[in-house]
Image (tube, rainbow, N blue to C red):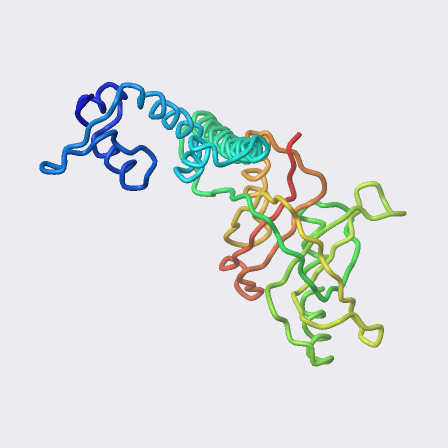
Length: 276
């Protein structure tokens, strides 16, 4: 028989690990000296040890490994364990691949610009949100056309909310969509604010539910919306560099709405994305 040290070297594991396997009943020594407490192992126990190591390298838990080597699971249960592990590994691989793509994209941006951008893009899931809204049509999605249309909508919306006794429960949210039956580049401007009331035809504003977005690329824009193009360019470049595609327009969430001092405004731009 082999001492625990010799057996550990043969099995290419640590003595500490063999003691742990003994303590949980995964691999008991063949004999233990009653006076010294020394553990001894037989050569044929290497087969069990090797199987334990192989199953552990698949990422199975020690409890699962023990059930398998003790033949306490049938083929169907083993198949289920391995399928679950395959799903876990696939998810990890996908996450690591996305991180690698993001690192490579950041390197390309640094190499092209010669500096590290201070604007970071974050992927997130957007929950559904209920908003009160007023709408109008702008000639295009260009800032010079959007600004004069959306700016008067918010004071009017807040006036109507106050008159109806409906308090905002969250930030303002603006979003856009192509206008039907208008000029080719015309867009419908939705000026909304988060509320917690049901729709009612008795009010002079609409209450609608914005749907959840499974994956949105988001960026924080500081300052007036007249300067939003630079942040939108960073967002668009990030989406392209990271292998995503997008359809439609960005939502604008006014985290800190400062109509009197627009340079102090803080806005999150949210753009739904998907893999191409």
